[in-house]
Length: 508
Image (tube, rainbow, N blue to C red; front, side, top):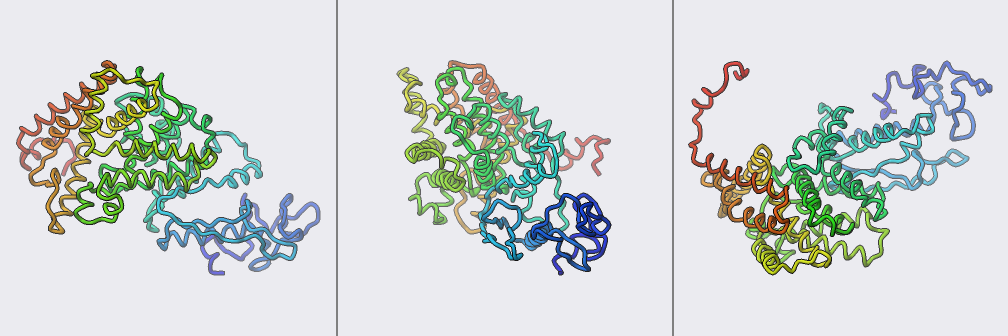
């Protein structure tokens, strides 16, 4: 049996042991079952164990389980992605009839890019049968281990020499401590993403759903919720410097801060909070890393599909609806309610289209001038959620300088990559995408002056100058001044940079 090679040392000899290290060849049953029978074990065929390789008794379900595990490992090393094998029954292994033949072993193959693995609750049942205490800490460890080991983010493109580092308890404790301060504006999403091993969006959303009691209110299935959130996180492109899952988590954290505004929090319903968090998490899902004009001039199929109007935003919305239906997260709700949620999600995500900035800004300013916003009205609350999502999407200049600068450099790097791609294919380079003429300070000063500042001035009027808004406006003014200072300073020459390095810095 070549499949067994490498699974354990000396396959087929008397050194084969049980899962707990017991030597099967030396154990005799007290009930007289004969050599090789471990007391208390239940054999699938109702008789003595089946000899395998030199007469060593092996428990058939355990043997089949190891064979399947070896085969899946082999598929992973050969480059196959996300192929999951499931059995129709709940047993971890196929069932056996009285004659020893397999029954109920229909195999279902399913593959989807970015889909989140189902949590195998049979693993928990098996450990409970083995006598382990079902404490919350052990259950959490088992679920976390399975998620990290099976998530495509970790296992995709792994070579045989790649080591897989899992998080220890210290990292989990630090991430939990950060979640206790998730409502503060200086929340470091980059550090949080590292502490969660790249699962910042899933971890943050699960925490916020628990904070607001949305799981109990909408009777959500936790397994389906984890699957949906994992699908969303995996469909963000990690190769994008800016439009990735960390950006989605950052927007979600900003949206949570806005939902806590005193003027808004008391008027929101659970459905409003659910829609706001979901739209923030999925507003840029499956972003290709290029803008809408690039898709249009290259005749991309998405541009044709959505008729050159809100192409990316429409794709983000439709992708989210598809994953909602695939995961079955809302399948228990009435069809009309589910359809209404999908349409409202679309309305929120489509509002992030930057080409509609003046449309929303003008409408927002008119409402504030006329003082006719009534948060008890469903349509007015939805409009405010649209504005809040737009603010959260472009709030990077309002963060502290250490975070704001990182986001600014990331978005400009994504612009420059598009410009390089356009230059490679002899296309007209889009505005802000020419690294030779468009500097990071110049791009950020224009972005703050024409996009961010006008919107947040109106948001400040709406919140009546809340503490959070005052803090954001202060950061924005300071960051704008810093970018102006950097634009005026000439770039340092290599000799100057070398002279500024301290002698004890360790730089060769």
